[in-house]
Amino acid sequence: MLINCVAYQEGKKLSDIPVEDISEYLKQPDTFVWVALRDPDKAEISTMQEEFSLHELAVEDAERGHQRPKMEEYGDCVFVVVQVVELADDELSVGELSVFAGPNYVLSVRRDANQGFLGVRARAEREPHQLRKGAGFVLYALIDAVVDRYFPVVDMLDSELESIEDHIFGQVGEQRANVERLYALKRKAQVLRHAVIPLMDAVGRLYGGRVPGVVVETQEYLRDVHDHLFRIAARLDAIRDTINTAIQVTLSMVAIEENDISKKLAAYAAIFAVFTAFAGIWGMNFEFMPELKWKYGYPVALATMACVCGYMYRRFKKAGWI
Image (cartoon, rainbow, N blue to C red):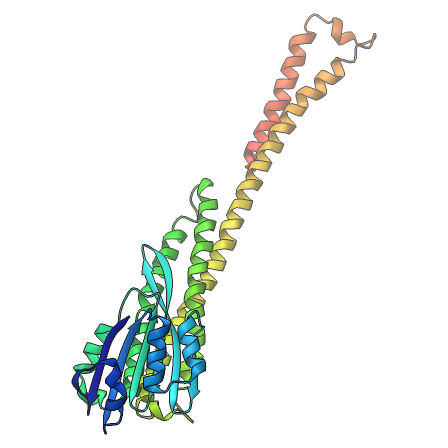
């Protein structure tokens, strides 16, 4: 679906133009065309390929989707893929933004992403001095908008991790739920990390040293985006390490609690073993056991067992086993 098709000249908007006139505007000096598509079908992609003379391999990637973040050069065209990670009801959804940036055009293809980039276009149009830099500035603005949307996701991961940590030393029944929440949180962090780390490598190739001609004038801005990605990656690594530590602590708490239960069971088993031992001795029915015919034999036997068991209970209690 076509979202926008706009021509700009010297940083100022000329007008919305029909798709079939794109090639004509591309011939005008100091003019570039910015087209935005959302979930396009094959026919729309083919039309854009014809108007912008796009490389068939890049078009194939944009048409199929589900690409890892990357940057590729096809002649004077830069093809960049970034993953759009969105937060909805504490769940993460992953979309995709493919950007073709040439000397006088920008084509963005958005797939499986709910939030649009109309704000990016409005921001660029409010800064004509920046928009004069052409497709390079638009490419930077789109990548920067995607990266800015990563920060709320990282903040959510931090908040959820703090909430789980507050319950780590809670009741035993909560430990299983805590481990499940920690693993779910780890999966979310991994989803974002898969979007950030490859994009760091891609953006790193757009500034410093040999860079595509499209982004020569925007290297400083792209370096800033790379710095943001580096900070996000560092926070994700810290979150992952904290999650692993929290999982180990939770499992240790479960093991300690199970050990306490085992000690209690062993202590009570030892106490009841006293009754079993005395009953076994006096239940052998030997003929010459004078205490069996003694008048006070029965109460003395019970008292002996009670005293021994009481003594053992006191010792186990003092040792913290009961």
